[in-house]
Length: 390
Ligand SMILES: [Zn+2]
Ligand SMILES: [Zn+2]
Image (tube, rainbow, N blue to C red; front, side):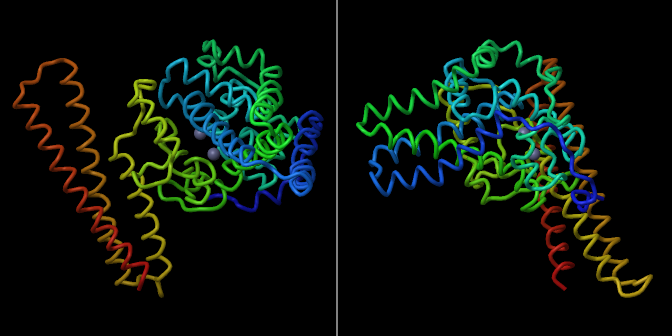
């Protein structure tokens, strides 16, 4: 069980203030809510400035989600050097530290999720800490340790960015907006909207993933950690709001795993792969996803039935519980069988020992099990609905 009161039971930690981030992340939002509207009222912004602000917001946002997060932190796919260069440059523009630091910290976040002392932005330490508090002080949990990022240290694009991070980020955040503004004849308008405002908006949208996406939403795949699925956050974060799925299957290039879930990062990666600019896209087998969902459904049904128990030894509830347990056991057995068959199939294919007809019979067996599973899931869902409703 999670101890949700932990956030208030532990004394606040007074780590030394990081003056660079504190001044920067105070001055930027202040400018965004004072200078930006003042300039808008007194001088007005050109249409070009608004368009450039949106374009840069998207470019930086995607550079973090498709680049920093799914490509580098999780290696969910591989990308052509031209794509990696683009993601590296706009990632530097997003001002969220270098790929190496970000990727290493994020791997620590997944490994020790919710751990007060080890997760660099543990949601157990409250909204403020997980949103941006962790950046403003030098907490022991935020110490750099690149031993989990040796692969990133071998990537020349990552190391180039790490070495020249400060000049790169100044170039992308000052020189590029000023140059673009000069090109469209609205230097200050573009600088304020595509430079300052874009930076602040992008920061908070990204930070929502560490704060809100660990507090607000549903848990369809796991309740072993605080991560939540939240379509509203997915809308603001290019698909990263499906964070419950992401924490259980972190190497999948999709976060919104269903085809209808809003995940433009997933669509971009699939599009790049179609164009030959990305490959090695990782997906977990659909059945593993179903297994996680069914396990959660089962837990919920059990809880709901337990809550409806009026007196000890309530026979009606016991009967229902037994039926659900039976159904769940059957489901797990089928999944296991499916897994074994699939492993066998993969192994045999590797050895090239299979005759064509055998392969067909394997596929047929797999298909049959999959169909049976589909029916079992429907029965389980119906039972869970019935037990929750009545
Ligand atoms: Zn997380
Ligand atoms: Zn992640």
